[in-house]
Length: 85
Figure (cartoon, rainbow, N blue to C red):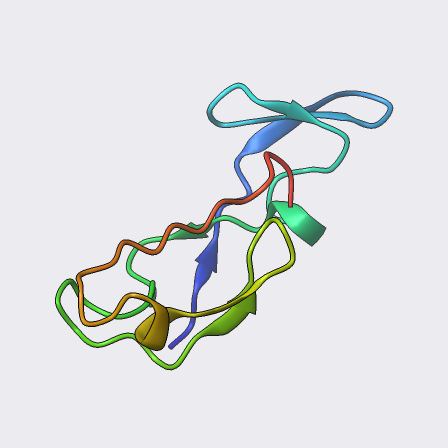
């Protein structure tokens, strides 16, 4: 699958680029950490689909096993990202 990148925007000055939504950043849209996909692209499991095995640490450094620690209860897994990737 070829993913189309959003490269709309304009250069405002040295290290200042505005994207199509008006966000100003030090990198132009579509480059480096600002590669926003357009159209359909894979985003992960569908609602209700079993997640893969996830073992990671929480914000306090404790190990968390998504399937074992929720003890059969439903879970919501939230990923956050910085404003500029």
